[in-house]
Length: 306
Ligand code: SF4
Ligand code: SF4
View 1 (cartoon, protein in one colour):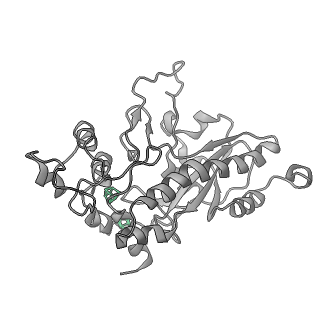
View 2 (cartoon, rainbow, N blue to C red):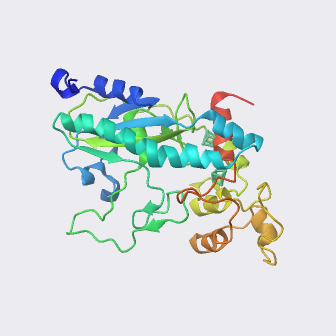
View 3 (cartoon, rainbow, N blue to C red):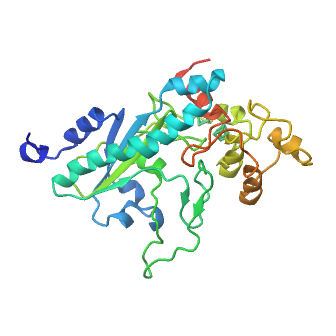
């Protein structure tokens, strides 16, 4: 069987066709203009100095998983299949397949998947979806002017650059067809691929449906409060069907916590999270016990559903 490199040229069309064949719902290729002046710790060119473009892919999370959260029928499957399996299994195989095509043609392919438990030094913007986050507070640049490792690109900016989505107030990337029901991955490459335009439409009209839906009041005018989200995602609220009376028994702040009134920082959030064992984690990913109320409200708003 002939290899693609022996019979075809590397083009944007080829990559987009292969992306769809391998399971992506959307694929776009963007210039790196949007990253001009970017913090070097978040700049794709800090990863690949000769990079010419960034390729973005979106894999949808099945709507049925969100319906199961909404009906209360299943809480575990969204995390185990819709988050962990896409991020830890599917994304990696997918990226290897596309990356190998690019590298067969003689270019570099730097594969980028979400790393929700790792934060660059000083970054508080990543939602700690997994058991805990590891902030690289002790990382140092190898020389003056070099970025502090590990460089983690901003997925919201990257999705916009690739023309596949736009970040909303909830911190989620929103796509016109899939709303927030999609997970993203990227390849930074020095291949001289033809680029499409940036994603022009910002679907987020600040409707606040996500804020109103969140049981932990984790989304406000400043966007997503990630520690607040971490606590309520894991179930410290009255709508958690797995909660027992002994959870936080004797804690004078119990009612405020369960009503979403207490504001958490990293320290107080970690203290409560250690006491939450409502469902087992799946490879480090905590089960979603807020039923992803923010994303479901956002999807309905984008789609004009009731
Ligand atoms: S629910 Fe409304 S405010 Fe929230 S992210 Fe979606 S569009 Fe934006
Ligand atoms: S609804 Fe859940 S995922 Fe959304 S902001 Fe609130 S706690 Fe976080």
